[in-house]
Amino acid sequence: MAMAKKIRVINTETIRPSSPTPSDLKTLKLSLMDQFVPATYTSLVLFYSLNNNTHTNTEILQKLKTSLSETLTHHFFPLAGRIKDNSSIECNDEGAEFIEARINCSLSDILEKPDTEFLKQLLPAAIESPEAATGNLLLVQANFFDCGGLALGVCVSHKIADAATLTIFINCWAAMASRSNKVVDSPFFMGASLFPPIDISIPNASLELVAQQNCITKRFVFTESKIAALKAKVASTRVPEPTRVEAVSGLIWKAVITTVRSKLGVSRKSVLCMAVNLRSRFVPKLPENYAGNCVGSIVPRLDIASSVIDAVELVGKIRKEMEEFGENYVKRLQEGGSLAICGFTKQFGDMAMSKDIDFYVCSSWCKYDLYGADFGWGKPIWLCTAITTIRNVAVLVDTRDGLGIEVWLTLTEEEMALLESNQELLQFAALNPSVPLL
Image (cartoon, rainbow, N blue to C red; front, side):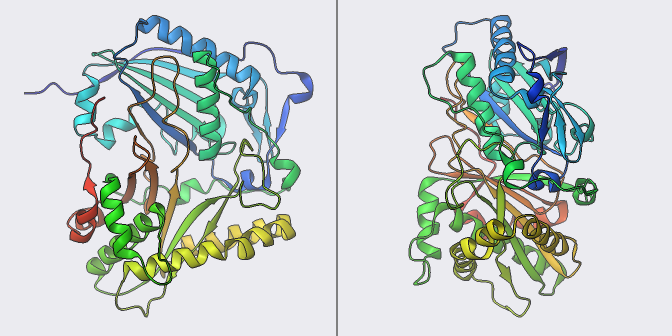
């Protein structure tokens, strides 16, 4: 009988900036976008085989801690602070939490059949942890396997970091650790100058979104060849060349709509709220290293009158919304400022809380350079994210080759059981396949 996998915490300590934050930088104003974001964590686990590594675990830990301290000083000093109120971060150098842990199995045991419940334990905090509102803005957990492999779990407060900001942080830290010549732009915290915070009490909406009960997260993997076949299937005169994300999102959306209809026996309105990185959408463009939350949304809808669900139609709806995004969202945002943000937030909130609409959230992390994070012992062989208890959420990330897509989808257990037998989905996606070792 196989021994149960267990994680044992060896040590927990606080990593502070290597030098104090200057007095004129002691307060960071949040943007209005930051204000409306629930106090949760943006999280990621990076897996390293360390096959060609000559460093001991002790040396690896020292390198991670020293470079993290330097990264907090030179790039990300706000992450060493604490949330002061709903409009500011107190950059008081209280530091980040760093956890050292041991796992009584090899990395290959984890990658053979990744288990989302176990993967959660590789993170230093749950995504929806209350600590996100009151405690550390940054937590790290270095998990060492018996084989010598490493899983590096990172949680950054969503109040100050979206997926793009997390990517900037990871790459700044890796460059600092490896002492590489890779050019990494420091983060540019400019949100409050574009979208000034307002004096408003905003409840932590995460408590309303979390855990409608018995939710489960599953991983679906689309390889390059399967995506090519899927793109050919969903192509149309309207969308002759669907993108990877459009094709995969459209199929996932169709699959969950079909699942809900088969469960309830009736048709319902369905909305797919897809996050869009605003940095390159603004006129003029914002810096790629803009740090903080800088995300808008498109909201393609399927009306209740649609009796036949067609992935081609759904991809067309996604493309239409994206083409109109500049006029319907970005322009209104740049012209309307605070009023526009408040209006969009209310609109999405009303749809999310409506009992008459099936509301799904889809976020694509594709094309973010997370597989380039080399701390000095090689690039990650795999990464995972979105191990959440918030239902109806899909997160798309690149496969290691940058050509496929992994979808991390969270539904109720009942809906997931039905989805797992959806033959059209399984024609293009593998359910939780093993991760090949290098």
